[in-house]
Length: 238
Image (cartoon, rainbow, N blue to C red; front, side, top):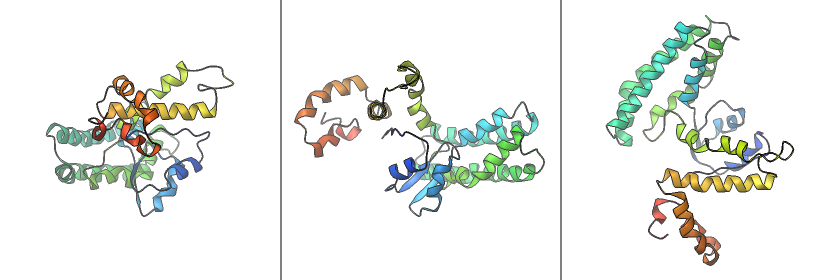
């Protein structure tokens, strides 16, 4: 459920190769150009992250407080709808209906406000960049309301990758060889990060799971290794 992949560069080739057989909803945290390839893919639905869109307006408060505060107020209303759905423990269909009723009108108001103010601010100003960013990604930003299974942001991913940042600093060997020592070691690190990340998402204590499966690996056929993964369907087997 959590899969880290290490790449030498941020080139488009990385996502293209990793997701070449992917079908479904793909949510990314920004307008990284490499994902534009999937915009015309009939089997992939692109979603943006409202948390990142909000961050641009937070940064613009010192530049244009009134405009930035207005945008943040509308985004706050969108998150209030999400909190309501969570508190009421709504299913996917019920959450979709709630968004249609309460979030869509707010999104329409925000979109109109963005268009009205786009020509009223300096393009290179912080508020100008915030408005331009949101308008550019608008179809993806509002798309989460079309399906109750989709999230308003990708904070779950943010939480999963957070340990990587301090890890890079803690594991730093020398400036010349980087945090992992080699590209192969970095690929191994990605694999290791994937396993406890999946444990956490499934509410499984990583060390206990690892202690249980390590001794089983040598006697497990390659085609059956998936049965040892830390997912709920495997708990009784482990």
